[in-house]
Amino acid sequence: MDYIFLVTGSIIIITCFYFIISPFFSTTVHSDGLIEQVSGEASSVDSIYRSVNELEMDFLMKKISEADFIKMKEHYQMLAADFLKGEQNPKVVQGKTSSKEVDMEILRELETLRRQKGR
Image (tube, rainbow, N blue to C red; front, side, top):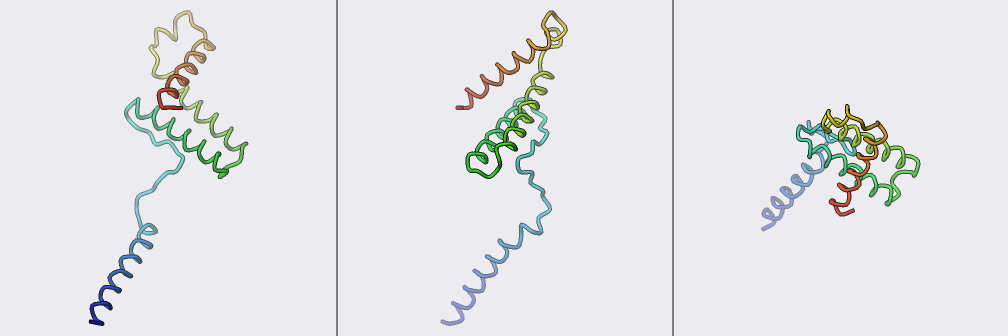
């Protein structure tokens, strides 16, 4: 009967040891807070908004300072604006619209996407 407990305990200890040590030898690299390039357009916008949401959660939990939060949020907003600029029809950009009008349209689009995400 003691051998059963010894074998069971050994298996449990080895399993726990494996789960503790295996992440250190993992070959996959995870990028926390960084945007990965995705081929789909909607996926890229979604990944940008996910990153902003994670950033806001980190700020609310006081993991990052306010200055870092503002700097990183502006960076992500610029990435989203650049992405949406590239997504626009070239005829609209070359037409009578100015750069400021395009930027305002991008900001309006960002706001509507945020509302759709439940913000």
